[in-house]
Image: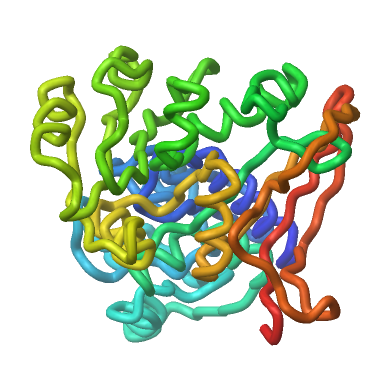
Length: 362
């Protein structure tokens, strides 16, 4: 019986994806005498937490048990602590799936509830609860964004033709999946090579839940001020990450065109990825979608900064040289970077391989 209301809480929590970040996804279900009487979820950043939404929807009915996928908060923020509203509603028992990963508050909500005489049970569907909020957990503990690397390639592993043309490798249904994801993440990252070759807009052409910031790793500020991203006014903020070596005139031209320029410490002739991702995290981005070419993808894998992969494989053969991840390789064939929690599914003509990155020795 414990699993059913928690599964419902998880389903409700997922409705907030793309709207609540950098807050976690949370759903809540209220029971009275083992029957569901009310439910709620955190709908948007700055709005009421899931527990408060459920209590409000209760009306004049009674509830004795609360199921929630994340430990109720006990610290004031944009909204009052949930640990005050729960006892006031007459709730006698709270079941939650995982503790708050924030090291500053972890366990405090459970202790606050117990001090008010409420029975607290921890650990209903813990794995499912942890997976739901992996981006939030990484951000709140490390102040780094969760990195999803996406690429499309042909059956023979090509991301583009020898001339560099990479448009329309994947089918329309695959491209819709990517646009849906763009409408949920905090930021989208490409390298300057992708900008110069493809001139992408990096906007969301489906109904977005949030407007992602568009970020370019561009050590020398080579992004053209007239590029499509800077002309696309309905897209998110455009950020160009350069190093101290970037010419001031180019930086000024980009700023005049509407871009925000970050000066990041360099690593050789490139932007230092550790410092770069740290800056993205400090700016409040919990989930970063990378749609880069082989060079930047290779740098991210070499820096062990990729958390999840979406690879679209089209039933096409282009021939020639090249691979999706360049400039980096595993030295021992028996110790590759692999995928866990892998899902393989057909998307019209394409195959989508999706999974969490597992590094050698992990």
